[in-house]
Image 1 (cartoon, rainbow, N blue to C red):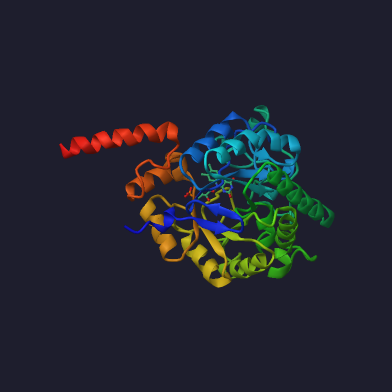
Image 2: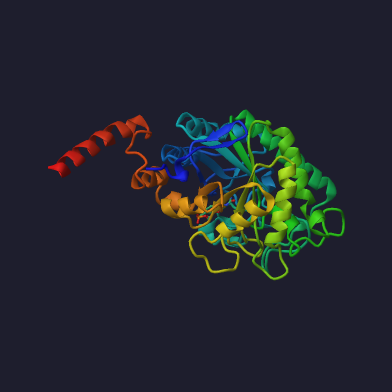
Length: 379
Ligand SMILES: Cc1cc2nc3c(=O)[nH]c(=O)nc-3n(C[C@H](O)[C@H](O)[C@H](O)COP(=O)(O)O)c2cc1C
């Protein structure tokens, strides 16, 4: 039987992904003052045990005011990196690659944790200790009515932001991370520069697509210079705003060409989020694999590797996406929360192996149990 593409390796620069499955970045809203803790160790460590080729952390803020919520992790100091070390070490010691998503939330910073409302912070959140801080964006436009009105970020603050992305990349390298991702999607700071709906600047960081892309391109260039040549760099974008007059797929293809020229290896193709809290919705109905056509258009249009994400729920679906050339990697989000052993379970169901590459603490027993089940079946 031919081995499914899903369970074949992918080489990116000097780094080998053992299979095509990564953990999509997922905020846990469980950090205190930006410091990761045992929750992150167990959560991310469990996913490493589950057979993902690569485990990416949630969005790690490159500045304290760049956190989405008070519960986000940060990477703006060495002490914050130290707090992540146990999780990164565990991931790597258990056969997976470790990645960190670097982010700044822009005008969506300082908001409520999802289970406290997922909107702007209220008096009730203040009483719980989550206080508002001033937010920055390319233009002084709120996400929607009732949200914080951001201050327009200055050019010297943009320069500082880019330096902080690069500093965080150096920290990720010192931590031993194998790959990193710049978050430029979901209505956070770098995406608000891209979209004409949120960027009304008249200086060199606004205007046409080139001007609106400048903040991200300068960030990618600085991060690439700070990040070892042998290690891959991903960029997550919202491939489309999903709103009239917004960022379109043709813009994403042109952007991906520019990013590729700067040494970006993978475009992680998400969508939406610029006009509200939702991370996954581009304002369109959401069938399984709803964002995969974006990954395909960018892969074909820009000649760059893509990561597909969004309602990928089973192995055959993921395999079809890879086989049809929609993407090179699949990122699994909520399905990984439902089943942290998703890759191993899919491998089992697709006949790839019965436990031989499981952690021996589990695999040794399950292999023997399997033998006795098969013997009983034979009768
Ligand atoms: C709990 C949760 C937290 C998330 N946090 C992030 C994040 O930190 N960065 C990011 O780019 N996307 C984030 N997302 C979006 C996911 O990475 C993913 O793109 C989205 O959930 C769609 O994939 P899925 O259908 O496999 O869940 C989050 C999603 C969830 C459910």
